[in-house]
Structure formats: C-alpha cells, structure tokens
Length: 335
Image (cartoon, rainbow, N blue to C red):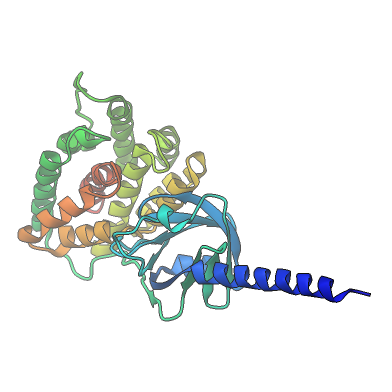
C-alpha cells in the first residue's frame, strides 16, 4: 500500500507534469489561415498527417501524401499550393520554432505543427487561380504590351539566373540566337534548349518537345531550378493565350502535357508547380501580369513586370523568360 509520503510525492509529480503540459499548450503559437487554394484544401483532407519538408524565412512547406503545401506568412503572394496565414510579415517562420521533420496533423479545422504552432482553418477564403483573361485586346495591341514587357524586364532583371536571355526572347522564338561569351553557365546551357523547344512547339513535334523538356528539367540550383521556372512561365503563357483567344486549345494542352510529363525529373516542389502552371495556375503576381498583357493598358504593365521579377532569388526572372517566350510562341501558333 502506498504511504502518505509516496502519495504526496506522486501528487507533486502529477502537478508538475500538468503544469508543463499547460505551459506547452500556452507556448504554442496560434495563427489563422486567411486564404487557401483548392489544391491545399484537397491535400488537407480529413485526418491528414505529414511533416515539415522545408523552412524558409517567409514560408514553410508541409509534405502530405506526396504533395507539398506551402504555409506562408501575411504579405506573401497567393499561389496554387499556398495557404496564407495572418502571421505578421515581420516574423520569420523559423523564429516561430518550426523545423524540418516536425510532425503535422489536421484535427477538425485546425492544423497542428508539433506543439509549436496551431493554425485555424475556419473562415479562410478560398482563392481559386484564374487561368484565362476575361476579354482580349486585338492581336497588335497584345504584341505592343508584350514588347513593352520584354524591354522592361530586360532592363530591370540584371544578370542572375536566366536574366541575360530576356533581351533575346524574340531571337529565341525564331531560332536565330548567337550565344555571347558573357552568358553565365546556366543561361548558356538553357539557351539552345529553349531554341529547340520553340521550334518543336511550332512544328507540333510532341516527341521533340518531350526530349527537350527532359533535358531542361532540373537545370539550375535550388528547390526551384531556373529551367523549371522558365518551363512554368512558358506553359502558363501558352495556356493563357490559347484559352483567352480560344484558338489552338487542344494543341496547347497536348504540348503542356508533354512538358509537365517530365516533372518527375526535378525537385518535388518545382515539379508540382510546373504541373499547375501547365494548367494555367500560377502565383497571383504572374496571373495579374498575364491578364494585363492580354487585356490591359501599357501603363499597367510596368509595375506588374517589376513585381514578378522580385519573386524568389531568381524565380521571377527565370519565369519571365519562359512567360515572354510562351506568349510570343502562343500568339504565333494561335494565328
């Protein structure tokens, strides 16, 4: 039989454990989801569980059922795989205690990240990406906007990533590029492949498209390699042009399937973004630019170009190369 002294000691231990449990609960950061993409809602199905895949200053990625869900602080652009929270833009995700490998589970309408962060999903607004312009300018005005965007991008992008290729988009589209010796290693490798891709797309050579995309996929460092971002911009632009002007839709969907079919050859994040881009689903900054290139005034183009160029370290620049090339090629095959 337990003595009074033993019962008292056990009682003190239970009290300490209870206090520690309460303290842990109190220390868990509470946040609220403000926007959620349909793909994220699907991934976070009933009883979903996963782990933290990667952590950055403004976002962290959760791996759930083989798919990534990006959780972002406020101020980050909405995207097809993002969940935006009310965590202030001044706070770093890693400073919240979120770390790679942490267990994540969905309980009811709450997303629990170990014992450090709890995100309420109640009241989050569903953000559904647009995939076409509601109306279009005539072809000459679209080309005017495209030329303006190319000049602005080339003058603001610098030499990082594929930025050096922005001034050569027109030449790439017609296969008349003479590589200059000052190109960085990634741009020098990607350039002839983009020329081959443009040619294969124009000629309707699906097998050729697959072969070139297979060579491009994964080129460049990081979770989102430069060539992948260019392919995302290229496929998204083709989709937007064809579906907005309602010409060449079936052909473009076949082209984009051929390119997105190579997504398994790169990082999980990059491949997932490419598959969405091939259906016209992109970051809202890119979405707005695509829309204004097709139906906007010249005065609206400059701020949107600059916003896209600021995405990531070079992701926006690299995507811009593909986007401008895809717009140029898309307008040609849609004529």
